Length: 417
Image 1: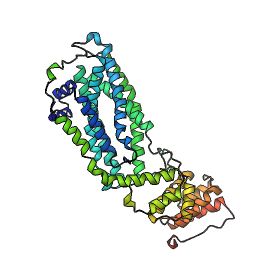
Image 2: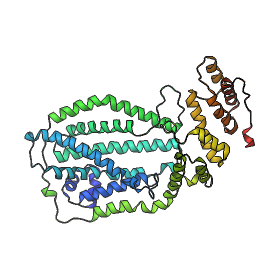
Image 3: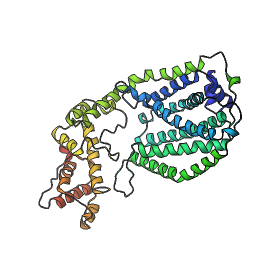
Image 4: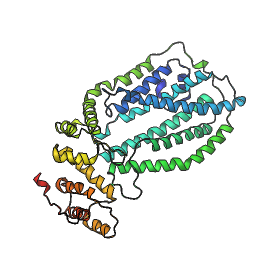
C-alpha cells in the first residue's frame, strides 16, 4: 500500500479500497487517522492538557457506529449467503477489514480544523461549520456506500439503501441526544441568532430523518431481500513489501496539530477553570479569574454557563445577579451575564422584548404571570443593562408595579456605574 492509495481511496477508487482491505497495516494506520481527526475537532475546542480523553471520543464513537453498520450489512449479506459467490472471509477478518475501511474516512474530519470562529461572526462561523459538516457527512455516505459495494460485491443501489437506513438512524439519534437549543415553536424563547440557526437546522433535520425513515426502511428491506454477494479475491492485492508512506502520512497528521496547541490550549485552560467555578457555585471566584483577563484570553464566541435554551441550570442566574451586585466584575463579564439575565427573564415571561406597549397590552389581558420573584431581576436590569431603550425601561417599570402595586420603582442611570 502506497501513500497515494489513501488519496485514491477517498475518491472511491476500487483498487485502492481492495488494497487497503488486503493490507495488514491498514488497521493501525486507520486508528492513527481517527486520533488525528480527534485533534482536528478538539485542538481548539477542549482543554486537552487536563482532559486528553477528548481526543479519543471520535475513536469510541466511530467504533460504535462502524460496528453497528458492519453487523447490519454483514448480517444482510449472510442471510443471502446461498446466493453468494467467491470465498467468504472469516467473521473477525471481515470485521477488521470493514473497520479499517470505515476508519480510513477519518481524514475528511481534517476540514473541521479550520478555526472559522477566529475570523468570522458567531452566526457566520456556525453557518460555515454546519455546511462543512453537511459536506463531510454526504462525502462519507457516498464513500461508505462505495466501500460496501466493493467489499461485498453488491449492486450500488442496494449498498446505498442499506447505508442510508443506517445514516438516517444516526442523524435521528444525533439530533435527539446531542444538546442543542430548545426549539422555539411558540415564539417565547429568545434565542441568539447563533442558537436560532442551530435549533432551526436541528429541527429540520429531525423532521426529515423521521419522515424519510419509512422510505429507507422499505428500500433497505428490498435491497436485503435481493442481495447477491460476491466476495472479492484479495490475494492479488496483497504485497509482501509494505510501503512506509501511509504510516508516515498518518504520523504526520498527528504531528501537524502539536505546534498549534501552545496557541489554543491556554484559552481552553482558562475556560475550563472558569466554568468549573461557575458550575460549582463559586461565582465570585470565577468572576475574579475572568476579570483578571481580557476576553481574548478565552475561546472566541465563548458562551459561559448557564447556556440558556440547552437545559443548563448551573450556576443559577439569581446567584449570578447577586454576585454582580456584590462584586462588580469586569465590564465584559458584566455585559455577558446581563444579556443572559435579560434573556432569561424574557423566557420566563414569554416576551419578545420589554417594550412598554407589549408589556401593557399583556398585563391588561392578564397574559403575564408576574410575581414578586421577578422584581429583583427587573430592578437589576434597570440598573445594569445599558442597552435598554426608554420604552423598554418603561416596560420594566410596569412589570415591577404589576408585581408590587405599592412598590416604587427605581429609575437609575446606568452611566453612573
